[in-house]
Image 1: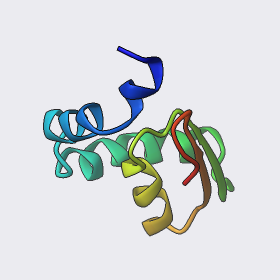
Image 2: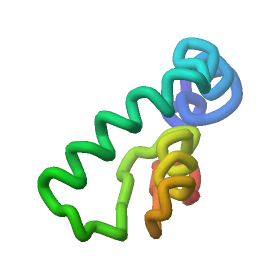
Image 3: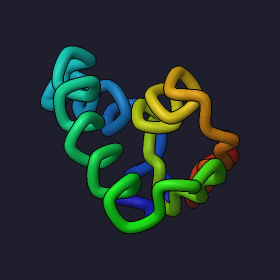
Image 4: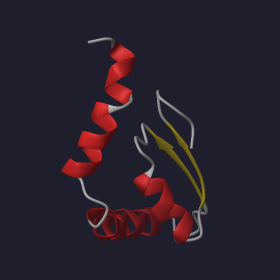
Length: 75
């Protein structure tokens, strides 16, 4: 398998099935709580290795300015 194939096609579909959309809001609440605990004024987030961007979506919904980067694409 070519390295780039891990980040396109089959793997993306498999990853999203393995980790369905409904888990992201629940786990985001934990992440958000930790961010606010350690920096209550935080407004910007850089998510490295953001994958399919599901947490990027959650950060945007919570009012953060967010940049997600991944080896396959930039969100």
